[in-house]
Length: 487
Image 1 (cartoon, rainbow, N blue to C red):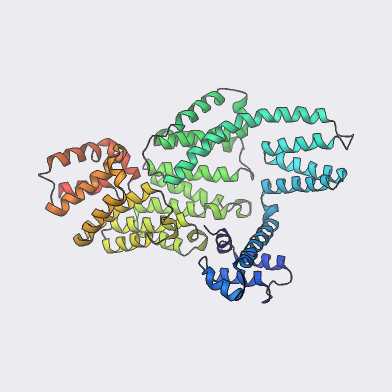
Image 2 (image 1 turned 60 degrees about the horizontal axis):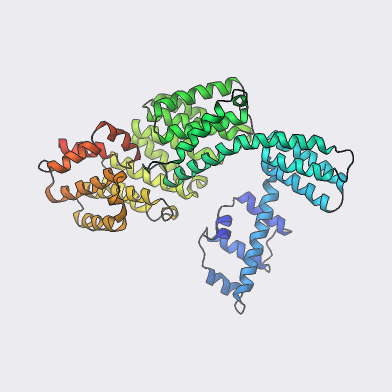
């Protein structure tokens, strides 16, 4: 991954303007190599020919000179972005204040260092950043050697009390991070058991049983995150709905939400929307989608860019059940929004769901066109292998509907080769069965005489548990196969 390329491609117009001012003047001097390299990379929108730009900048030079230029540009870009955004993020601003304190301490100016340390402490307390407070209390103790007015015993006591908060919260954070990371990588398409859930449940039991500790708002938010992840992994949507709605009511009633945890509030709304959708309560899901639209504009659109995609996603999933044309229109609207399109996963979501919507409308040519576009996207190469397996099976289903048997035969061989290890795992029985079923349908156009295959299909795809498993399908195996059998 080219980090410099990624950073430049992700910059907005305001950040570009600020960077050029940061360089001095208007930053447009054509004689500056860094400006020329920046403008070239910016113009190429994330794709550039390194050898070509090197030959233009240094026709008689060494590549080491070019690499030094790239490193200097990367350093200047990060300084500019930091200066521009440091005061907009409470946690980042606290780190900045602590860094200033360390600078003046090393300059042997303890009085100025003390002034900025107090500001850093106030900022860390504001955001309940206990790990930063640990560093700050350590700085107070160190400063006490130079400033007699600082009583080190006060800060030693504060640091010990603070360490208990860190220990109480860290175990849940660590386990939750692992679960969240796994879910993001697999995008919920993996059905393998995850042993980390047992550790998460054990941690929850230990800490939520402490009545005094359970009143701590910071911990209550951690427990909310952890419980939600457990119920999501178990696909226990009914319990999750009840838990989320009650927690949402309690947190609002107790006025726990504020600017510092607004991100969590928006996340909770997204979970409520998705859970209501999974439970078939589409009107309620859309009602909370309206709340999300309002909330993402709060605090001067603090997290607007981050949750804009989730707002549109909420519309798409609901409209895909009630009005597919409206879902398609919403997806096309998303394609036109640069803030959404530049994120590889979001762009994949758009084309994948367009393929699904057109498939459900029996517009198979449009469906395969968008699925083919999906495989050319930047995010596809780095997508989870299990997701690619599901996408390949979806393509087989579409090709079958198109009666494109020549291509289908080639794709059938390719999927067995590319995903060979998937066919030996019991956890993938539904997917591998679908490949076998499509293969048989290519030969005979009917499954009536395939008793053994139908028996397996009824056991793993068409039964009641198959309905829950269809959450992981891209194109619903259960519905599609029922049509083929009944037809």
